[in-house]
Length: 284
Image (cartoon, rainbow, N blue to C red; front, top):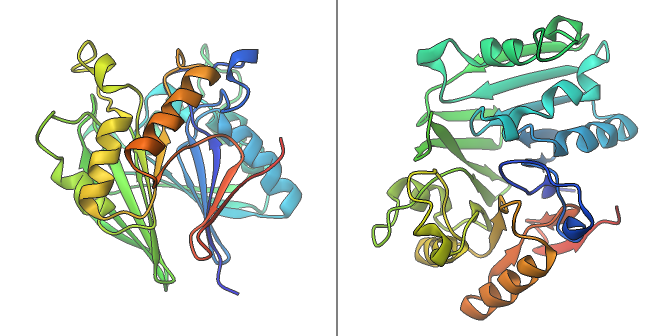
């Protein structure tokens, strides 16, 4: 039976916020697992990666490919707590598309885990770990029927957007990008073109964006505009601002649905089956 599903393990941006006011949508930072048949892809290594790692241990998943949008703290802080990486016999590949000119992804991850900022070095990870760099714009074949298109995004220090095509279906992972009002981003449109699900950086509202220009993020309204323009079937509003607590996100969800029925607000535990077209929330 074909499997192509998307599971959200961290949907928050900027910083984790584990408070009673962030329970319904979740307080962990960016981490999304995409299952393509027997292949596990992981997008970003925010704090949500810790819980995903525990689930992988329980499920006996011993190999995966981790694709990073970029390496700002909120997207890599979960990596040192990814318990499967400490298990001998496991295999993980880490990929990034924005670091060729600055030393590569292994150097960034290694420095993150060096004293005095972290007590456990990268060398302590007993799994077979490989670190590879590509140029945003490359197309990656991660299996006979897993095509990953990449394109650069508009974010300080660079970022990469992804589109996964598998089994006749598709998902786009586009976070940490800033739009130009009135000028749809052609890279984003290309990644979103006709996808079953577009996951998009919706950190702000249009009203908030006016005071955040240059910060490298977008709005849920722009996400809706882009998804409709690109002919996407669904939009997952993602990378929620830590100041946007549960009640605020409830209002965003209602407003987004009124603007376009294909929009939904991503929350921890949400699983979208791209083949069946279903969406469910797992208990936490």
